[in-house]
Amino acid sequence: MRCYIDGITHIGEGVARIEGKATFIPYAIPGETVEVEITEEKKRFRRARLTEIKDSSEDRITPLCPHFYECGGCAYQHVSYPKQLELKQRVVQESINRIGKIDLEVNPVLGMEEPWRYRNKVAWHVDRINGQLKMGYYQNDSHKIIDITTCKLISVEMENLSLYIKAKLDELNLPDHGEIVIRQSSLNRKLMLVFRGDGMENVSINSLLDYPELESIYTINNDFYTLLHGEPYLEEEINGLHYDISALSFFQVNSGQTSKLYDLVKEYAHARPSNRVLDAYCGMGSISLLLAKTARKVLGVESYAPAIKDATNNKYKNKIFNCDFLTGPCEIIIPQLIDEFDLVVLDPPRAGCTEDLIEAIAAISPRRIVYVSCNPATLARDLALFEKEGFETREIQPVDMFPQTSHVECVVRIYRKEKTASTTVYE
Image 1 (tube, one colour):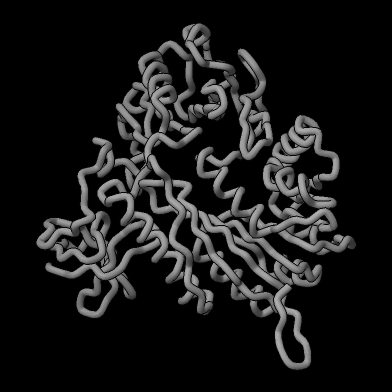
Image 2: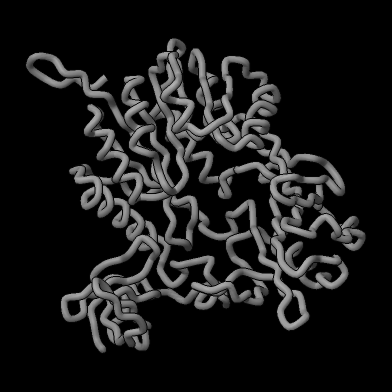
């Protein structure tokens, strides 16, 4: 069946209309004419498999990774990098227009000079299959482990350690199922190794102790972690601030782009010496501490207790004393706050904010809101809710934190509208 690709989904699949019905086709690029085979028929859409490219896009390239078409880690390796950025901007723009009903042009995506080997963290799945331990990524839309020989998103040092561990799986006394996580500091290139899952406490690490650059080895079971070897933290530096990264820390996986993203947050926030700042979903406090350098006072709120522990440690590490943290769900804590805030920063999970939380933030009546989002659809929904509460979206800047994948981060500048008798003033 022949069709023309005229759209793209948020997960990077091409979209065609066949007999009036939207059809989703992995690995197809807008502008191409292709032959497909229908694989799934639903009431409102179809799914199809690409069988032949009749008219190829000039942006179609050969994937760098030999595992691309079976591994679920990447979505865009067959697309030139400038086109990837264009497609991501398009996805954000369509979400803002269609879901948010907001008439605002989204800025071009802020990309990377070198969009490969950027990740500072990798998580490998481990499963025993037919009596033999396997380590790798999951195949697309399945829990079948792909035997990975290379990953072009992680550093050479992380890849070499991964292959070393893979060769020694039978010596490590691992359980039948689990996860092996490797983290790396961009500051000194040191590595942290984490064995995660039930039964990982029995791991044998003797064959790993002399591995160069390996700074620490942990086990984690249900968020309880044990340091088996080495230093308790990796050191990291972003925008002049120093962080201790633990086995449980949430830290952006792209250190280089994180610096650019935080520069945007700082610019949009424009925190002044008189400003009181609320940082919702503050994680390990990286944005809180950044803004505390120029603001009067910052309060960070986060439900994940280990992240707040990291935030507090990093606060004292950087000698920042005008920043405090509260542990608990933002949806519960923020409506109870009696303090006033000039600025609110939001960095919620992919699900976005609840309507009650948006109403609670509106009740605080901050002059400015900076919204950091990893999901264009929930971002658009939430921006529409803020518009109803008397705010206006002024600027949306996507940042490519995850090249070769379909994911995109956005930083949004939001202002409170101050109405007078004759006009609307933006503070």
